[in-house]
Amino acid sequence: MKTSIPSPFAPELDIAPGDISRLFIEFAEEAGLSDASRIDIIRAFRSTIRYGISSMLQATRTVSFEHAVQASLQARKYRRPSTRADLKSFTQRMLRDRSIATRPLREITVEECKALLDKTFAHSAHSYRKAKMILHSIFHYGQNQGWCTHNPTKAIVAPPVVEERIEILSTRQINNLVRACETEEFRCMAPAIYLMLWCGIRPGEVRRLHWCDIDPREKMVYVEGMHSKTGGARAIPLRGEAAKLCELKKESSDLIAPSNWNRLWKRVRGYAGLCHWQPDVLRHTFASLHLKYFHNLPQLQEEMGHRDCSLLRTRYLNLRHVSHISATKFFHR
Image (cartoon, rainbow, N blue to C red; front, side, top):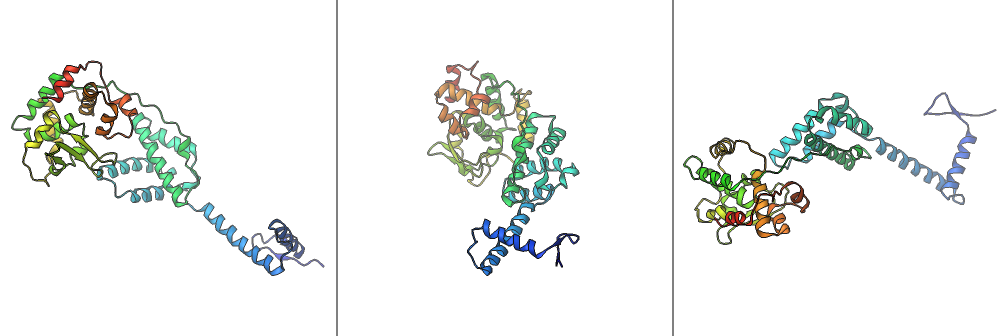
């Protein structure tokens, strides 16, 4: 009479002792334990089961996309407030799609990621590319936590960003801006504006600088890594109008830019007649005049805080209407 043992995985399926014996024999042969004792084979079998179950649980371990987003943001809580606000804004827009927000991170496909980006960020190529980068970072964090095994955003091709024509300030516009900074109302803005125009420092960076970052003896301004957009420290010579900052006596702990920056920055541009304003135009002006005068692209890259020269060549320089005379006058005011 055939004796059977009810299976705990499928109660309707019976497993005969002969089946179990054959299973152990096959295991011993595959594991190279044919000559081992019965107890050693059983121990090895148990160890394999435990390892297999652990691997299976690890392979299926995951969290919801929403949980992964929050955990990723928490891991970047050390970033600057403006960066954190930017990340939160983009991820909140992603989480409005509840069909994605509640999905297990491990199960989200390339098609779902692309549909999310197309639906939420297709209005702007720049926003689309930035959202893809943030989405990529969320899955990368999930991979490190063992919540997924692949990053579906790697297969998504972001639309190219069509660059606008690079604008720089003319000599007349530079003079108008300097005259505006000499007025009583906007004199407090002059140091920050001079650092942006004659040192190529970004607006966000200059607002984090203190007077102790100015070295009058060396005639340099130091942008520490904690103040830099890219995280790298750099030292920039004080030239042109920016050289006058060495003569000012200020408390070293004071910020260089005034607290009411946003309101004054818009007003001073209007006073100088610069109504049409292209973002980063001061950095574009600095970069173009610097290269025209010094003819040193690696030096320019270092002073502007770029990782390489490719961005300068494609998005920062406009040498068409820049003469060597105008560049010389710019740096020797």
